[in-house]
Length: 314
Image (cartoon, rainbow, N blue to C red):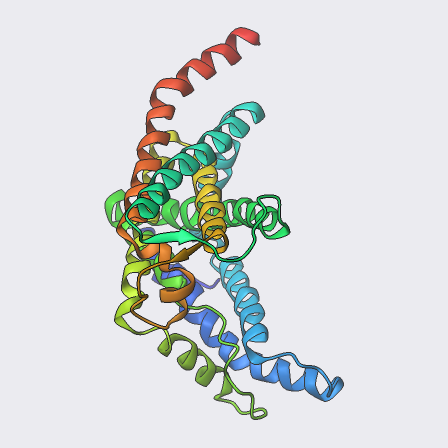
């Protein structure tokens, strides 16, 4: 970076401006590049059924990474390293298991209440616990927990805290974490051939289809989840308890999507309103907060005992 860029990205303004560049710049660049990439693929392999949605998502990931590398001084990499290396390997594994267990217990309690009050019912289709989709949900939960916690709490929250203070950084990172879920793939978008504005048209269509009142409850639920996870990272000084809870949430809600059916009318048709309807319910909000309380209690009472045992064994 040149001196002018460094002066703009000062100590206090650097992280917010850098993150704005990652998201706005990354999406804008992806919108410009993705139609060109898809046109090239279609020219090389005309029979390809690849759509703009998939190409746009891959381009957005790559452009975001490119901007993160460009603004690496303001991304909080040192904080991420500290959060990932805190404790022993054994203690990290225990924290993941403890977080996952807390999420499992809390969501099971919430789902039990939803079944009791007839908001949920058992699925009409045959479902085996060890079905492939359940194992896939477990793997997806662990992967999402590690990647998203490293990104949103390990990098974003840590870097914004140094610039904006912890409260503002927590609210901002949780809001961004929630809003990112609006960027789900829109496979209904029809590709009419290359044009400079095709990527921007796709992005506008993908977001616009989510803009309905029924999208707000799931967004609020995701925001609550971000707050709970940020509090756990701050209290534990590590990412692993949050990774465990995040993985547990993904696993539980994916499992419930396939093993139960909604008995009340879903008030919308957007992707978030339908696929993430459970996260937008009051019982789910209560379950997420409860899982955070259980994990926090464990970190305050059981974790010190675990550390003492590890020191004694050493």
